[in-house]
Image 1 (cartoon, rainbow, N blue to C red):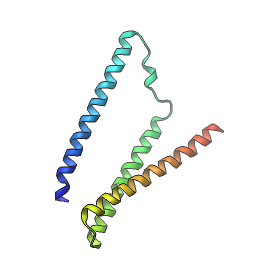
Image 2 (image 1 turned 90 degrees about the horizontal axis):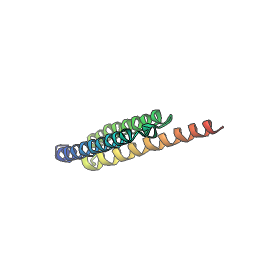
Image 3 (image 1 turned 60 degrees about the vertical axis):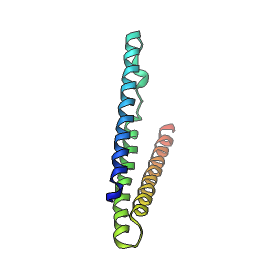
Image 4 (image 1 turned 30 degrees about the vertical axis):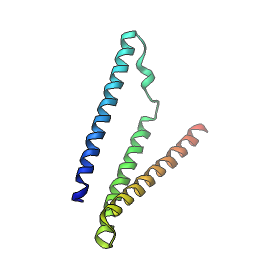
Length: 113
């Protein structure tokens, strides 16, 4: 796990730079719309904000479960730590996204009826 520390640090720094640039550009777009007198309500997502939070919540819980299972695999089997962690993170993160898709599809069917 110590060997993966630089990878995590670089990923966190890269993610922070991308997130900050996204927020800065989004704010700039809204300011330009307000200066022109246009309505900034086009950026609002009607009713989808709760489901976006649900998606990220399920995804992050899946990643946490993947880390726990990866640690369990590393401790109890002869599997290499990198293989155990990365495979379980991707597996459980993907399962979380599939669960979100199924929940969202069910909600869309119910709202269409």
